[in-house]
Image 1 (cartoon, each protein chain N blue to C red):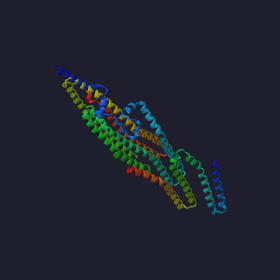
Image 2: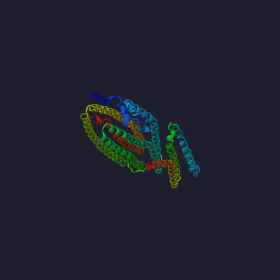
Image 3: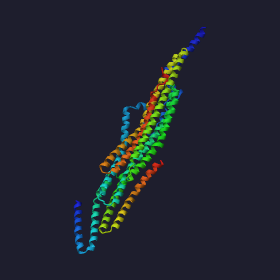
Image 4: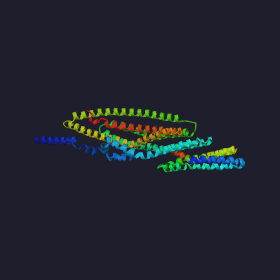
Length: 375
Length: 128
């Protein structure tokens, strides 16, 4: 009898000893070893354009401070300053020469020669403007591609952390929703951005070189129409998917509560320790989620920032040039530059809406309650 | 002050043409023509420092593609206009129209590389 009692006591002590490990320092190691939940793969999904942001998720998240953001903006501005100054100089140079030619052409009485000169000055303005804007369009398309590639890599990582935290339904709903959004943003570049830019390009050419016909209003309406439609679609998608994710989170939390209740009350002796272990693991998963979320926000910011700054600076350059052109009496050239500014605004709207949508979902991921921790 | 020389030259041409017209009327027109060409060349010569200034700007290489055709076209238009005016003075309106047309064609020829470049942009944009 005494031997039986000793054996049972020893067995119980061994079981409890195993349970005690759960709140020890080895929880993160266990997660990484057995659950495959390390954030090492994060480095591989960072696109080349944002490679400078850091080497791993922890470092990226730790370094993403206000000071770092200011540094990124400053260095990007410094990098963009030189090409922008060159472009602005070319645009202003063309405007000044065009205004000199316009002034000199007043001394030419022949109407046909005057018309030819007007055509040539306008052609120069259009070419200079397109030389500036074409690089920005390509940058917008590349940024959208980078953003989508990053999100495609991030979605499985987010999903695995949702599952590890006990939010199985949320993982499925969130992954499906984000894949839909990513596919939608990917299609935006091919089916909205370039077609609208092509149509606006044609309309601005007709407006600029076509003489009496002014189609800038049509171009403006087209851009407004697409911007409004896109905003509406994105708002609806964001609303629906975030609601689905919230519902799934609630369902997962109820399930986790039920499981914890069952474990604590029906498993004798070790049930309480199991609850502690689950809470410790849940806390670790919460840390991982926050780290991944913050790092993802930092990478999205690093991907989008150069393109946004370039667009803003280019719009600024076109605004200055248009104002100078109108002051110098080159009204048609001024209208062309205004048109270019409007087209850049459209590109900026598309890029920002995609980025904000992704930022919203990444932030909600890092803030979502871990199912295992629900009380 | 180049303008004083040009104004003096113009008055001299007018005065000489007037005298020649009284002495030998058929030589008055060639004299006026020669004077006009000399004055035009002198005026165009005044543009040289400005063109040189544009060429010396630090971003001249990028600007040259746009500035060169514009300045050349202005020169073509001024020359064609002067030639057409002389033709009209001689009572040759039809020839004057042809000269203006030729000037316009010349300007369009100067535009051709730029039109080509613009079409390349359009092609690249349309074909993605």
